[in-house]
Length: 562
Image 1: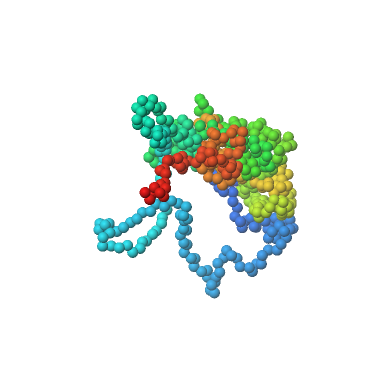
Image 2: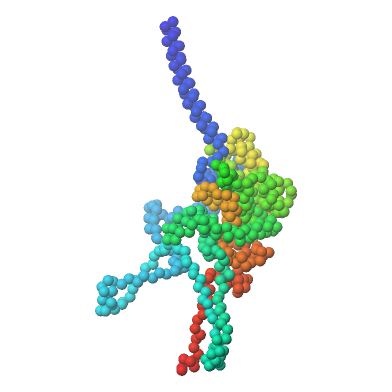
């Protein structure tokens, strides 16, 4: 019994040791499974794959499909293997690379900056007032300096003038006739009106209002930070005053954005859209209400922001009702309601599909890299055809892209059965199967993009802004955001300085017909500014540039001789 007990104890210890090992292995396998099925990528990691991996993956796809690897899609041969590579510097006779040349400091172009000249003389010359010295040349050096920007105290001085009679007869009559002098009427007093470009009953000039708009909605500086910045610069602008100025500017500008949206619905060929969340503090609630900000990029002419408390098809139909054309968006179901009407055609986004395969790199690196390589080839064709004229661009891009699409279809057919139904790779293949027709829509017209990155990029400022102001204080602040941001983003599309544009439009819009507000949109502003009348040009001119000062009349030649 003692011998048997000892044997059982040994077996028990061995089983317990094995159980510990199995439990450890189970934990490792569970962690691997979690990483495999996790659909979310690591945060703040760019979706990049090394080029050499993509080349190897493309070679595997071509080998499996039986196609010959070529340098382009037209069947032309590769470059000569013996041709020198411009990226490698030539070697000397010993095979060693030459030493790198020392990098030179990049020179800045200072020609467009105002010049502040500082003249420096030696102390002994200054003490002697230059006596005993003669100048013999100078040495000049230039540097980039910064003088803190400050607000101006715009003082409008409107001098009063009294009209007086200057004829000699009137002067003699007034001098000899005291009764006539007592009965003479008071001289007329004239004064210049306030320039039309200056807002009445508002303390800030439109130039200062435009500065605060750009600082908040382009540079993502909340009003309380602008208050601190102005305090540091020597003059505090309270956030309450800033809010009042933004409210006045919104009252003038929202009609322009409404007209831009109506023009997009009526005339746009393709609208790219996307949405993101915008937390709004609800009155009396501890948690923020979640609103949604939509962006609509119409034919690279207008960028229009809108917000709504719901992310639904009814919301999209409210804004895109009546639109007939192509809609470039992700595969969200909220757009199905307008697709079913038949007037709007869906265009798929290849960047969204690529993101699905990028998320599958952890669980299926080989297959995911192959798919990313094929999608990357489509984007290369897009870049190479971007400079062509439209009819040729449509044909060339479709002709070169169809073989790549055929390779992708064959690749999906071969490997779709291998993917685990719970894996990210299976989700990517399913997304491709569901969106296959929409993803091929770019073949129809050269104006259609492969990706929706343009609308995603427009929403990036809102994401950055949320890190600064956390939430919108109320829905009114969100109303201001979508209007000001629409105009600023549209200015960037057309190469306009948003601060200059906003200043000029804010001066002019109070005097502009409401039936023609679309002419003030950024895409039409250069043409509108060129057609302004002299009176309208005086309105958009800053007051300090207006020449409204009386100067003495130049003396004639006879007077000078006398």
